[in-house]
Image 1 (cartoon, helix red, strand yellow):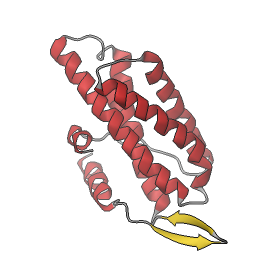
Image 2 (tube, rainbow, N blue to C red):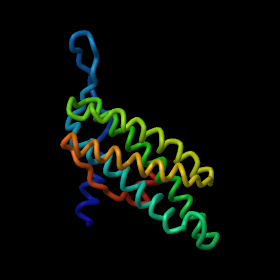
Image 3 (cartoon, rainbow, N blue to C red):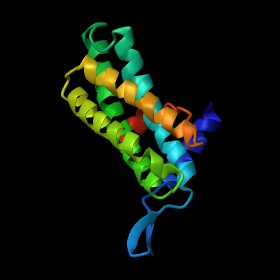
Image 4 (cartoon, rainbow, N blue to C red):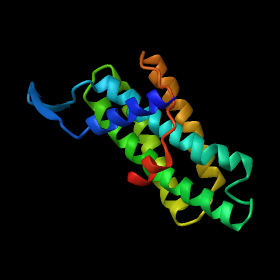
Length: 167
């Protein structure tokens, strides 16, 4: 487990925003080195953050009860996870735009990005919207199925709390 976290941490630090553009028939398409690998990493972290820090605590009732301190701590973690998941999906979108294979995932990724953005904003404000959480969970399933169909399955990776806080 420690080895996986180390690889993910090193992978994140190496996944800067270095991209270049190339012109093909008058259109500009961004290219990213190792787009499929980075896509799987970023999408896996987004899905892991959402499921571990938002969806599972929501289903367990930890976002609405559990004592004032535990409840507030769970909401803070959920808010950070929402923002983190949104950020990671945005990075996955960049990677998907750079790959002809992954370009089929632009629509489900964009829908997921919008859901995570709204959810993160709500949770950071301390608001819990059950339908928004369920909708985001449904959209992660849709996106995961689309990625699987495109031959690029997503494996969830749970980020650490320090990764959530770091952005």
